[in-house]
Every structure is written in structure tokens, then in C-alpha cells.
Length: 383
Image (cartoon, rainbow, N blue to C red; front, side, top):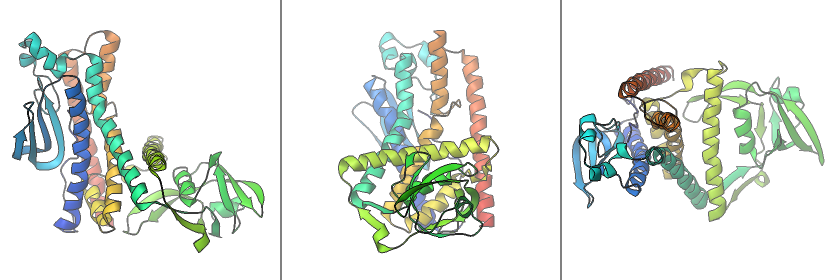
């Protein structure tokens, strides 16, 4: 249906099996399910699907199913597409000459002759499939690995930190932040991490009493175990690692689904929060990463085992689903914007207007990928 366009990419270091294979594994899963969403809803709406491709460029191998769809693996494994009957290309731009010459029977199988609601459903099915995939992966991880957590008890406080200024004391147990219940240390980190510079009302349990503190997380650069730098809000406290404060809980199917939905929403919330701060000028854009950084992170995460690489696939799936919903021509969100205008006007935009829109969208996507790749190169150069 559309380009899951991640651009050109180079792998700096890590070796073929160390970076490229984990990257391709993660990307292929995410792209396949995105396009599968388009494919299944299109079939449900009676649209003829000509091609289902994982990758771009020359076909390596493939087969035709009983409905005449060509399923294929292509030589450039950096995305994928579904091509419908009446499409001129993989971006689902209509072939005007072909669609104009269609019989009534052919029009019923053409994507571009479907009702607006059908076309919108087919388009939105790709991002929705990404969110569903993420929920399924997160659910499976919780079911098989359980939920490990550490209580939100303060063990130590850094001098001259936001926590010290707010009056935190060792032994305090954080129970809620701005009215949101805190069940473990990770819950607290989620909220604090995306609220740098924002004053939070934090309730702690101290010697059997509830005490309300006000703290403003400071923006700090934090290095992970692989040396990657992340800018997050921090209070300046460390958790308690006492054995009685750490637990691993078995999670049943229903609770696992709830946790999977919650984690998927957290990724959406964190992404949108970052973009909001970036637009407002409170966050640098250098955290925007492209294919090179994804490849690097994939290689790093793969060293931790199969569970973490699946977790990364889920996070990437949410990101791609969210990106595709942005109202940018060429992306799924751009198609949805055109369909919304068509529904309001009672007729589609002119061919010229749509062509201009697609060109603007292509230029925007290319500029975004160039910028992200530049960030990746700077990141690798300085790391």
C-alpha cells in the first residue's frame, strides 16, 4: 500500500551477523505485519491484490496464490509494499489510463473505485496491524518471562539533585505521582523520564505517613549498558536493591494482555511527548534515529537474547505504525487526509492536487531520512 521507507543504510562495525541480521530480522517482522494488515482488509473488501512484496527491487523468489496475488521476497530488504489492482506503483498512485478503461466488474475489484470508508479501512489497517503486533509481542514476553519489578523505595539521594531539593529521604516509598498510582520503580521512571522541567506532585509513604513533595526532574544525559546516550528527566535517587524489594511475578493471559496494551501505549505516549518537546524547542532533534542507529541497536540488543530482540521489534512496530499515521502525503496518514477531504467535499481532490501532495510528501520523507541518517553518523562518530 505504501512505502515503509527506512532509506539507505550503512552498518558501521558490529559485523554482518552482529548488526545486519538482527536488523533485518526485526525490520522484516514489522514490515510484513504492516503490509499484512493492508492485505487482509483489502481482501475482505473485495479488492484484488496483485503483489505482496517483502523488500523492494528485483524479485529473489516468490509464488502466486489461488487468488492471483504474487507473494515475493525482493532484493532490497528495507521495507515492503502491497500493490492493488489499478495501482500504477508501490505507493498506490492510481494508473489513470487503466482505471478509466475498467469495466464495472473490474471496478468492483479496484482499490481506487472503492467507497471512501473501504479505502480508509484498508489504509489504516497497516498501522493498526503494527499496534496489534506490538501488543501480541509484549503480551507473549510478559507471559513467558513474567514481570520483574523493584519497589519504588528510595535507597540513596544524590546531593544537589531535584530529589534533595524536594526533601526526599532514604526509605521513602513513592506511591503516586500527579495522582497516578506507582506500583514499582519503573512506573516512576516512566513518568519522571518524560517530564524534565515539569513540576510533579509526588506522594511518598514515610514511617507510616503520607507526605506530599513537589519535585522538578532535571534533564540529564544517561548512558545505557552499550554506551548509547539518552536524555531523560531524573530526580537523582537510586532504588533499593534489597532482596525483599525485588520480585518476579508470574503473569496470566488476561493480565499479560493488559500489560501489553499498557506498554504499547507507553511507547506511543513517550514518542509523542518527545516530539511535542522537540517542536516546543525544549528538546533537541538529535535523538531522531534512522536505519543506521536501528541496525546498531539491533546488534546490541541481540547479544542479550531472543526476548530483548522481540521487545525491540515491538517498540519498532509501534514507531512505524505511529509514523505512518502522520498526515504526510505518501504515508498512510496522508492517504487518510485525502480521504477525509474527499468525504467532506463529496468528491476527491483533483489529480493535480494529489500529485503535488505526493511530491511534497516524498520530499519531506527524503529530507527526514537524510536528517536521521546524518544524526546516526554523528552519533556513531562521537560514540
